[in-house]
Length: 357
Image 1 (cartoon, one colour):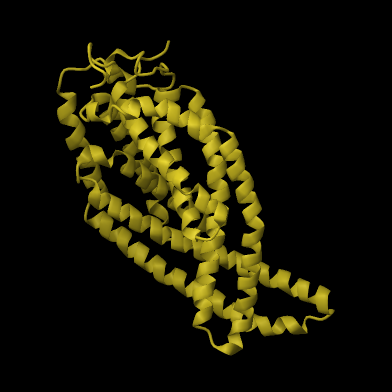
Image 2 (image 1 turned 60 degrees about the vertical axis):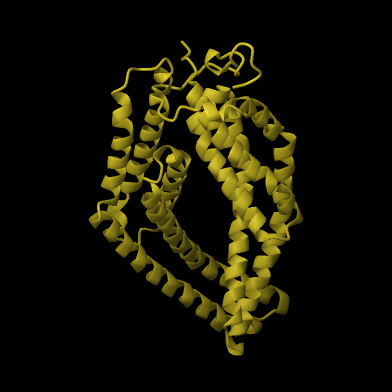
């Protein structure tokens, strides 16, 4: 049996998703030109935020069709992710090279050359995914589905129990997952778990950002902490990637040198610079990790996560004491919602004799 659609979930979800969809589309030309690396970054972030909202509101707005939306957006996000990671590596190595002395520059120059070659090789793949994304017609389809709800954002009831229950449940679920990594914070060698914690931090941050407008400024401090955690865990992960990549790069470059020159001798002049860069990333990881561990202890001692749970309780409890609304049940289980448009949903129809409300 299908559940009744909740107009407040639909309006809030449509408005949020339209914001991310518009931001994504705005960067597409810049990604094609490949002149501004920030265009790739901004489009990637927009796609990730859009992906974060789709499981929350997609069913209410598009039924099972939202699963196709998720799959399509995931494809472009992955393509952009590889390009962005490459851009970040190039930028970091370029800055590091500027501060190096001549005896050690050769190895890092070679590393930079190979990274730029790899980035050039990625661009056709980015273009292929971008073309595929455009041909899918997803932007038009989503805009047509979301726009009829988005225009009614002024009629949104931010105290709708269904909407607030969804916010409460989504935030608590992500928070529980994130805090599940508490046991490995003092274990810097747990590389895979720290990477998973970084992803969990990202999910919690995007969930908080999605529902922050419903809480005035009461989530501001938590969002600041999550941005900091995500940045630090991201920097740690980047260093871990380099720890694997540099030895592999050195081995590949050694084999390439032998194949081209018939001897390993030309490769030897690259070794010192590459070792210097690798040592610098190891030192950076130690520094960032120490800061992250101290920040984590501070957040716990300050009761930051308990405060977040309290903020959720403070927002939801007064609303639950009010008489139930017809739309309240829709947020309890939105696995198979009714696909509606404003003209079909009596709660979203214009008043008699008016063009809009």
